Image (spheres, rainbow, N blue to C red):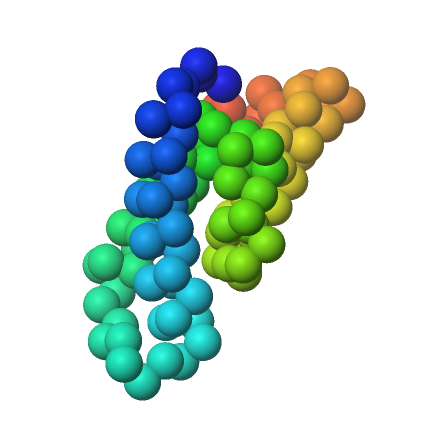
Length: 103
């Protein structure tokens, strides 16, 4: 995790909130929002990138309380990290095979 100033965190939270609001509106079938697949994907990628460098549970707890999309992305990142740790620690042969397949 990187060290961010409070101003940086405020800016990241505003950006994450905007992205999450679009995802939530689209997922909720809001009539006032036009689904743009490329923008939807970009918002998801943006949230994932932000949550990769900032612990969302510590920095953006209010966002996670109010946004299903933000919670889902935070949960998926956490699950991915657990799988990565388990795979490396408990299944080293699987790790070697997956790394070979990825090339």
